[in-house]
Image 1 (cartoon, rainbow, N blue to C red):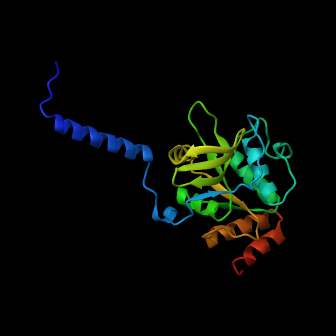
Image 2: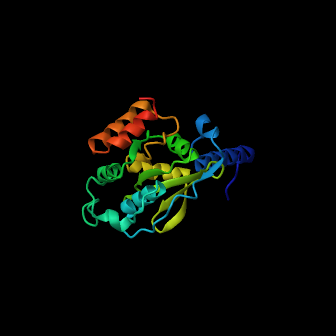
Image 3: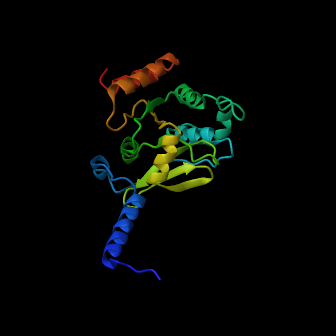
Length: 223
């Protein structure tokens, strides 16, 4: 028979442990910057292309190009992205292909706040995720969030509106190296734009022979 010397202490300890566990499940505290954003944002107008196993890159990029007014499908992007088959340096090839279409690629800082700020401003975010050793790395579009429920919504795989918890998304994004970019019209400056990063994107357009697009991008900052 088990005798409890101090049952009240045990109850208090159990309550404390439960609170700690619940706090852990809730994830890290949200930043003041995130609290200043709308509670819920979803960019429902972002196009969706269902993906086959190797198509996360072309499908995600096709969605962004279509969002910017291009007429394109994932199949038309497979050859320039060297798919299926060669997935080495795929991030850079996606950037190069976006620039070839006259769009400015704007990398984001490795924190969730930056991603959510852009989504709240109407800009879908191209992200790279690693969801564990049993799942391959994949590209997806961050198109919404709910900071009360602490979930994000993705265009990913076969799911037009894939929900994922903040904590799982943050982990998968971190494991893939915190890679996230915007693919913008050169006439639309991101929220809280970093002048140097935007002008570097304009320079990349210039080098790719997209001089008119580069000029448009620079004019947005008064250059």
